[in-house]
Length: 295
Image (cartoon, rainbow, N blue to C red):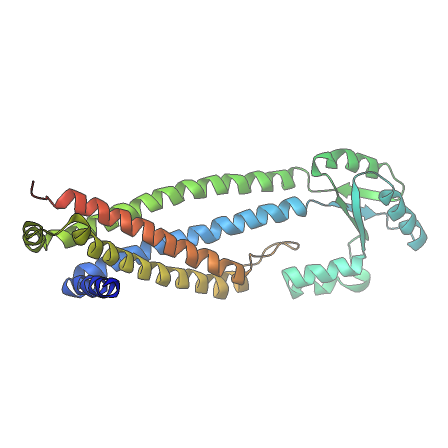
């Protein structure tokens, strides 16, 4: 009996879709476009959060060593830094290694500066345990011998974190507006679909059909359309992210895009869940506002 009801419900839902193909296609298209925008926003927000975490982790002090310092003096400087409090790691980067990183990041135009014409300084990259104490640690390092310059980006690093937080807030606001717009459009298109079958629905109610009997096929119809739209939108967003963003858009050294394998379950899962919620709410609102039951 239960299997028969499920089969009948599934069959009637697909009949509703095929009977009103134009409206069904329009509903699916609206859902796909809206959920594509939603997917892109989710990808953006997840990567912004990812970058924020990396920015906090990558706030490091760059210590540039005097050009006259030889290897023993550089080692003494490194030991002096390690003896300070709030230090977790000190890494030596020669000027040749620094130039190699610049060539890899910004292209072959910097190859002409390799060798004797290299204008960079040897440097020590210092990682701290507590970012809130970085200013005090920076002042201590600047007092050590053979330190030409020491910086962590100062306002640039702080502005980066502040800017990322602002973009996150703006993204959540846009996301909320997008979800509201998506729900309203789906409600309107489903309402049109129900209106075209008003006589058939009224006949069923007069013959004793319950609210649940009337509601379930439209609920499944709405969820099917939004769910398929969500799957297509998620696939397009993930495909574009994997093919274009991660391969073409360069980001600074020390940062990386969020892993594709990590994004797949997040985007697909969020789209399917949102499709069920919005599809169900739209179907419920459309049926309640358009179907009158006899008293």
